[in-house]
Every structure is written in structure tokens, then in C-alpha cells.
Amino acid sequence: NDIDSEIPFHAEKWGWSYGGWLGNNENVKFFADYRPEVLWPHLTEFFDLSGQQNLKVNMQGANKAQIKLNSIFIKESSWQGNYFNNVPVKLTAIPPEGYRFVRWQGGLNSTEKTVTLGMNTDKEITAVFEPYQPGMTEGVIINEISYKALKTEDSEDWVELYNNSNQYVDISGWILRDSEEIHRFKIPENTVMAPGGYLVICRDMYEFSEVHPAVYNVIGPMDFGFSGFGECIYLYNSEGLLKDQVCYANEYPWPEEANGEGYTLALPDPNKDNMLGYNWNNSVIKGGTPGLPNSGVNPVTEYGNKITDSALMDCYPNPFNTEVNIPVSVTELCMAGIDVYNLNGELIETVFNGSLQPGIHQFLWKTQSVKAGVYIVAFKNENGIQIKKIVKY
Image 1: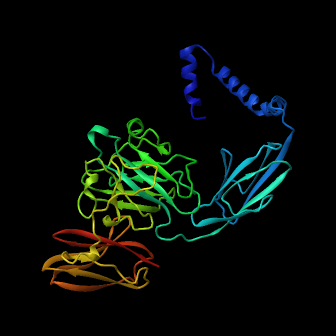
Image 2: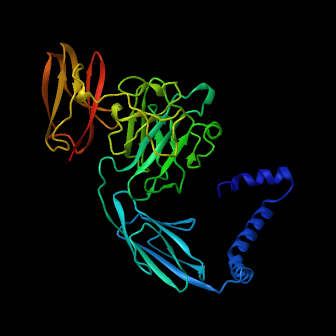
Image 3: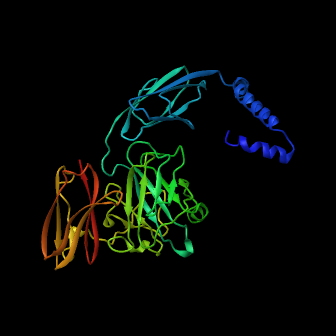
């Protein structure tokens, strides 16, 4: 239907008829409809197989769950098909957001997310899911960033995602973007990350493969790069909800060797807050470790341990309900500000703006009129900006 209106022009240009084109389409449909009746007996005889068995798969407990059966993705709550006798099939349970896989039941009882099922009889199997609220750092996160590589080994910009959970996560239709709203990369359909799995999104597939030929879990190209001066990278799910963000800089407290010296920004511990520069390392080798665990050297000392500089200390309680304490330590008289932002970068409230004497100061942010969610506290003075992530429930 998408090209139907164009066909008469091409038929006139190349000397064939619109009716002939419609007839050929019907022939193709007829062949596709009746081919299985011929194909099944042919394959059975050619490979000396012993008939077929019926497999029925069900999903229980979640409306948008999926099952990957060999190479196909099943999204219906109940589905069935025929498979050759004694040829095993592979099943993977993929929960939707807000749920987790519990078990297989019926033709196989197992809590393994991926199972192999022997087809020696007709079988029915059900994947059971249940509601689940993941932790702050649980899920798919931004894990490594290459924003300014060496000119001699330039793989172009890329970012690595990591599935920091014990569930399969379908990231089809998710959006990766930078600080420019129009800079968006949409992750292709049927892209599923395994527990503890990695996925690299690169700007130039050819240049990336020239530098990293052994990395296979890579997609692209994205039609934008990342700033060498620092910017924000956002990851949204298919419904437009922000799942993760990293706002990096090319200077302290972020590792500076990633700025043109051949290293990448690498998060060695995915359970730590990736919004904080002192949680990131330089990659252990030049070029980074795309598709592999991160390590490296962190030249940054956590702010709370520095007694010679002003610091935004840990906010408490965190998570909180109606109010949260924001402590700061100041070593010399300075002009400073404390602002609170949401994860879209919108200013929610200015908690303080003025001069501070040396010492430790406590600021109370009352949040009765603020909805639950994740927020960023930013402490600014003439030496720069420091941030902390807080959660209201």
C-alpha cells in the first residue's frame, strides 16, 4: 500500500501494466500461503526427521512481556507452533519494565531465564512474571563514553550501555541523545540486552570496527557526536521516560585523560552513581574497553574526603519524603548557590544563593509540593559545580 500510488508511473515508464504488478503480488502471496504444506514434508524427508510436535507458550502476570523462541519474538499472551521431533528449542523470558521473570511452569519447571526444551512430545509451557521495583542503579545504564579519541586511532565517538540487572531488558525503540534535542538515535527493534550484557552505540560503524575489530555487540551509526568540552547524554525508554543520564566534563572531578589523550570515561562500578565524576575512571588502556568490563585508574578523590576544598556533602535522609538536609563544607569565604533540578535539567528550586563563611552549613529543602522522583542537587561556587543525586518517595 505504501508504494501503490507510485506504480502506475513506473509501469508507464518501463512498459508494463499496473494490473500485471497486482497479479504478480497475488502470485507471491499464494506461494507464501501454500509453501509450508510442501516444505514440511520435504524437510522431514531430506533431514530424516521423525515428524512434528506442537509447542504452546503462554505468558502470565504481565501484559507486555515477551518470549524469544529461537530467533523469533513472541508478544502474544498465548502462541503455538509446530516443531520437528527431538529438535530442541531455546526459550528466553523477557519481562516488561516494572516486572521481573519468576519461573517457567508446565512442560518445564525452572527459574532460569533462558532454557532449552526438548521436543519429544507436544508441550505447553508458561513464563510467569511479577511486578518489581528496581533499585536506583539497577537496569540499563550509561557505562563508558568515548568523546575525544586520539587522532591517530580515531574510532569516532561512541557510548557503551550496560545491563546492570539480572533480567533480560528489551530496549527496542529506546532513544539516546545528547544536549541537543534534535540529536537522537533510536535503538532498533528486537534489541534485547542480556543480564550483565553490553551494547555499544557508535557514530561511525566503519571507523569503530577499524579500531575495535573484535567488538560484535555494536550498533549505529548515530548522526551526532559528543562535545569535547563536556555535555549531557540521555537515555530514554520507548515511552519517553528518562532511564539514565550522564553530564560529564573535561576537567576535575572528571578524569581528564579522556579529553584527547586516547582514554575513555569508564565506570568501574555500575552500582555507583554515574552522575558523579569521582565515580568514573580513565579506561585502563587507550581506546577503551567497549563491550567488556571497565577498570582503570581514578585520579579523583571523593569530595567528602578533601579537607582543603569546599564540598557538597551527602544529603540525608536519602531517599526522603517531605524534606532533605543538604550539608556543604566551605573552607573560605565565597559566593555560592544551591539549586535542585529534575532529570530533564529543569530548575525545580533555588535553595540558597549568597555568601558563605568558612565552616559546615546545613540547608533544609522542604518538598511537600514536589512530586516523587529523582532529583539533582547542584552546589556552585567560583571553583566550579558539584552534584548529588537524591530520591523522593
